[in-house]
Length: 149
Picture 1 (cartoon, rainbow, N blue to C red):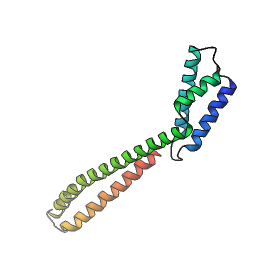
Picture 2: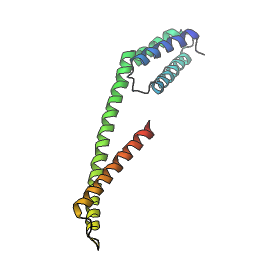
Picture 3: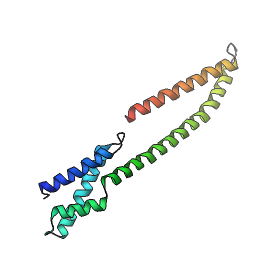
Picture 4: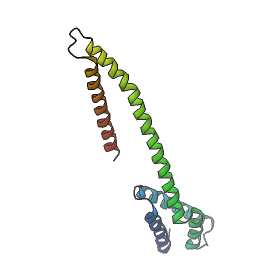
């Protein structure tokens, strides 16, 4: 059983970390993980040495984990690396979409312009198909962004 003073010290530590985390970061998940890690480490050490003070063991655990500034910096760095990888994945998807949609638009424009009654010229059909491909891309991006929020 964790004493109230020890719980308060854990909450103080977590509040300091929460204040330092970037606003765009999902702080609740990080804080819950951190709370769980601190509690598990504290209880494990209390089982090993039942006579030790909880606050003393907690200070050792928190010292091993690191200062709130270090924790926030690590998670901020992890988020930055994650954002950069998301950006490169997005660029890959855009490039792949272009590589696929342009030849398909060209083929469709050629087919439409060579129908039995060629009332639509190749360039008009190509522009129309490329505009539709671009609109589809915007709609798909919007849907993905909306579903991830």
